[in-house]
Length: 189
Image 1 (cartoon, one colour):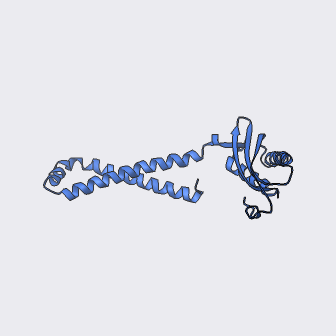
Image 2 (cartoon, rainbow, N blue to C red):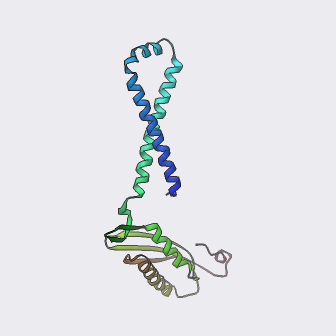
C-alpha cells in the first residue's frame, strides 16, 4: 500500500473526477428544456460536436468508476478486522497492523548473525497472532537451536512491545549457505 500522502492524493483526484461527473450530469439535466433545439443543432451535420460529447461522456463515466474503485481500495486498508487489537480502554481502541508487527520481527532477526536473510508473515487469529518465518541461515551451526532461539526471541519481543499474545511462531529454514562463499558474504535483510 502506498504511504498516507499518496493515498490522500489519490482520494483527492478520485473525488475531483467524481465531482466533475456530477457537475456534468447536473448541467445536462438543467439543459433538458433546450434539448430539442440542441438535438436539431447536432442533427444539422455537426458530427465533430457529437463525437466530442460522446468522448467526454465516456471519460466522465470512466473517471467516476475509477473514483469509486480508488475509494473502495483505500477504505479497505483501514478495515480493523485486518488489524491486531493493541489496547481497548475507556479512551478508545488502539490497533497495530500485521505489517508493523512483521517489521518488529525483522529487527529481531537482523540482530542474529547466524541468519543471512528472512521473510515473515503475521496472521491475526481470534486471540492473538501467529508468525510464519522463512530463513536463509549460514551453515555450520546448530539449526534446531537457531529455530528455537528465534521462536523464543520473537515471542518475547512482540508480546512485550505490543501485549498481543503470540500463539505460534513457525520457523522454516528454506536454505543454508556457507559463510565463506561470495553469495554469503553479503548479508541481506
